[in-house]
Length: 195
Image 1 (spheres, rainbow, N blue to C red):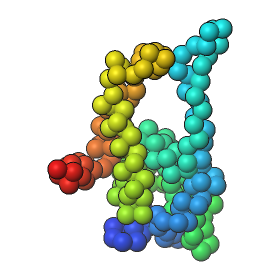
Image 2 (image 1 turned 60 degrees about the vertical axis):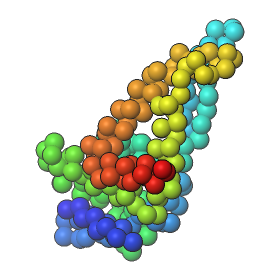
Image 3 (image 1 turned 120 degrees about the vertical axis):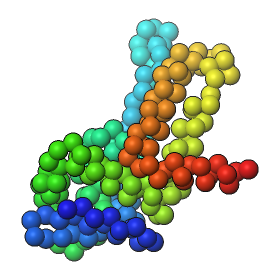
Image 4 (image 1 turned 180 degrees about the horizontal axis):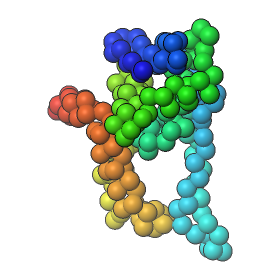
């Protein structure tokens, strides 16, 4: 059983066998995410003059890795979410216990979608991570609004990749609304607040 209690503390619970583990999305989550789940992304943006791949390397904080993983329906991100959320829990469950608890819940497509949706909402609606979520989607909106012709000539490789990036972020936005329909209200409220 997965329980997300909304409110200032965003209490969350995961049941494994007869034991219920309760945690929250806060500093313990952040610390564990950055210690265990930060990643490095290497993106090819074209070719060097000698024909070798030209790449950009970016360090991705643990929160972002988990958030994006949940958007991609990656089971490892679901386990990471619960590992971080329960990090301050006394008698914290092992990764194997978390995996087993999730596996026991995920019996069909609806229950799999529900497990991802609840974890994603835990981050997306969290007051603690509200600025990080807002920054993620601000970056997305900035990329979606870019035009190839506005990029400087020395970024011609980026010009060819930009349409794919725009499509990528449009797909992300659709997935976000699938996982968290409340995000549409948050997005509309943010737009109203800008006027």
